[in-house]
Image (cartoon, rainbow, N blue to C red; front, side, top):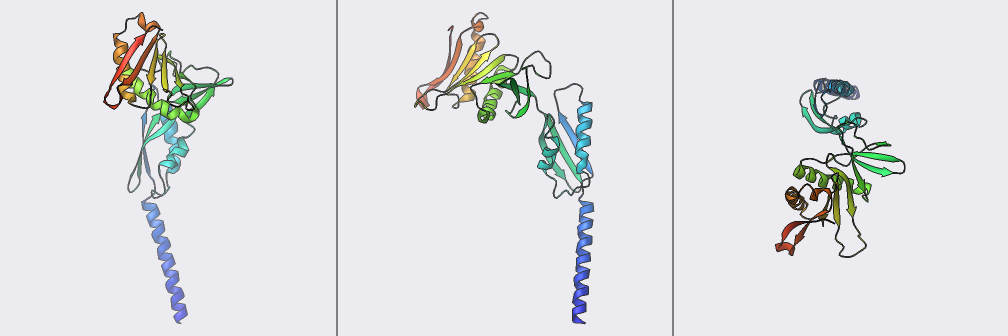
Length: 250
């Protein structure tokens, strides 16, 4: 009898546990997915509808196990990345997706490989024209390895903030680096479409300040000076020194 009572108690416990799991699963199942798009397109209804529909596969999944990676897997083949992800218990997901815009191009073999503003790969094509068809091609990167792309993208973002634009005024970004040479000054070079070259010496240090100094000097140049030459931004005087920018017509 004792054995029978133990079996009955165990069976009841299992049933109660199973019912509890089912009830929790029903209460904390995804029922609402609110999607917000950060996009540069005027007509985004089709994109919104497609993304909203693809995310609906998460409906019914447990809130406990759905996370940002779940959304990333769904949108990985699109031109959107997850900007924010939030759970609102018991049953709602708030997701903001940001459009990934083609910004950089790297030429390898017969193709240009396109990267977004964060330096993340997107696709390959035979030309550098931007898919937005806004009249500006993507910025070509030279002497920059794939591993360096995210870092260079951050410096390009600083340049864009200071100068107010990137693709429309910069044709090429190159890196002059010789790590095998002790004491060599590494340079990040922005080749502008107008013909001017902006060179940032020792670009990993005081980057924002140097680019801002370059912009201040750029504004003082004449239209003729902007057609050629080099605008160099650098720090002089060590830790107690200043950041300077000067122009050379060569």
